[in-house]
Length: 574
Image 1: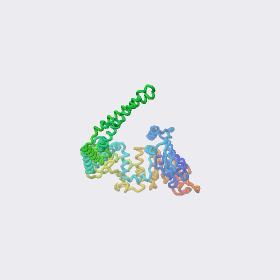
Image 2 (image 1 turned 30 degrees about the horizontal axis):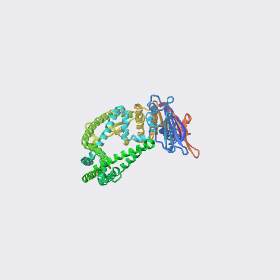
Image 3 (image 1 turned 45 degrees about the vertical axis):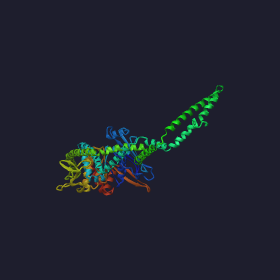
Image 4 (image 1 turned 120 degrees about the vertical axis):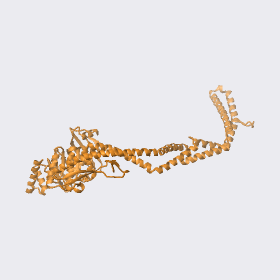
């Protein structure tokens, strides 16, 4: 793995070769250079504070050797990335404003993809992970990870059933707790639908009635106007001296018709006068029919107004017009059918809930059995690793328990009603007996800082055998460890490096001495800018750095002799 860091505190290139690499130096410097840069490459949070003051952005680039069939390579190619001679190129850019961009194999990708690749490339562990191991949830995750498919397969089935139960329970709770409100809603809908059905409004009825009411209310005026218009067009039989329009047009037509043959223009005018006469006769006839058929019945007018009042009552409550009232009735009928079916739905959901509880009980029992079957092997494996880490008498065990609860709140597992959650009904605790004769106690209560560091390292080494990743990064996991225990930690990390790439940020010379290669991160200051540089230590330079780590004095003969002895011990003990 090769990391190039530009503008993330410093400008440097860090080569992380296969085997065991120890990163040492002043407190915090190594962590900033290696851990922060690697964290960004693996999809960690982008903090604009990492950008050097005055710089526009920070860039981290990584070249990671992967096989073409490796899961990370396959996932990267699915995202459109390309491998470069078996090397996956990853870069992350963080702007001073906080924006972040990621590239994999020459292709711009979401930052989330980096996190997906990280799961198959690097396992990062630091002091926060040690504290996380104190939580029962993390201990259960550790056991489940070790158990592999034996737990993951039934856990996937359990999770699916658990989510469905949550959805069913939520819907059932809504139906039962809101029964009164839903009954009230159903009554209101039923009343409204009955009121609309009794009135039986027809489409566009309100428009038609408004027009009829207008006509009936002005029947006399309409009849008088129609009669007057008819008389003007066709004449009044009672007034023989009156001149009507039809007679005048007919006379004009006769006058022109006698001479129309002498001029085509006059002939056209004659034709138009003939058409006018015909049209006037038709209008006069229709006016006579209109006047004769006009109904001025006050009883009909009263009936129309009463019907309009009925429709107005509906539109005031259910819609702006009859069309809206009919739409409300259609929607209300559908909603009422849904509400009336709630009792049936409650019965269906109750039956499904009981079936899901029974299924969860069966799956939880399978999970418990799988965890119990793996717990002994897991505990024995961690205990064996602790023996390699200067804790020869320590014993680790795994306690799996369930909490009994009421019938309404739990599921039946092994003949008991127990509490359950999204991962089953089991509560998992790692117990540690550090010395013979001491009772096993939860590691959160019975382990010192140094012991906790070694327990976590032992757990990770066990994982390396069952679920390996190519690279492990340990960030000061040796905190609280010293003396012989530190030597054993270094020896065990060196053995882990036989099958994986191991990078350790450490301040312990006993651990650094076992590394195949040691990197020194040191700060320099030119009066305005502080920089950190990375140096590969070899020969005399490595002895001097180990002497500094041992005694704080690079030139102390005693410290140098001890450093050389550490290196010899490490070479012989790998």
